[in-house]
Image (cartoon, rainbow, N blue to C red; front, top):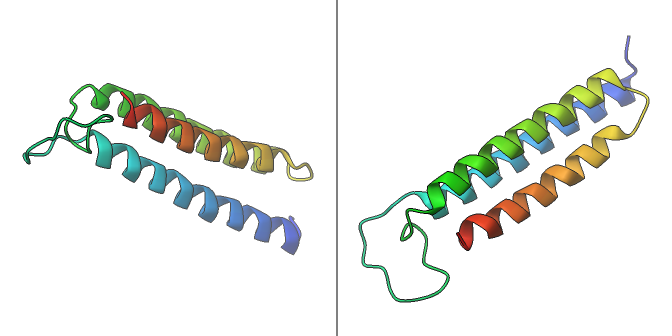
Length: 105
């Protein structure tokens, strides 16, 4: 039976990781989904002005979802270790990197 501290850490990981993953997905798709307003000649293109962003957003959606799943599984499989912190940090880096990658696609 896991201790109270381990259960609290697992809950924080699940909630924090889910919030980070969902926020990253919202940012990716906010930039990628086409909109019908007039796009100005600015670089990088405003959100929704570049259709080349959709495949990049799909890629980063899959990457961040996989990292979240792996991080949660590492926490369950290795309860006494701090692998979850590395996974959560990797998820944060992937979210920021993915945002910039979608923005400049």
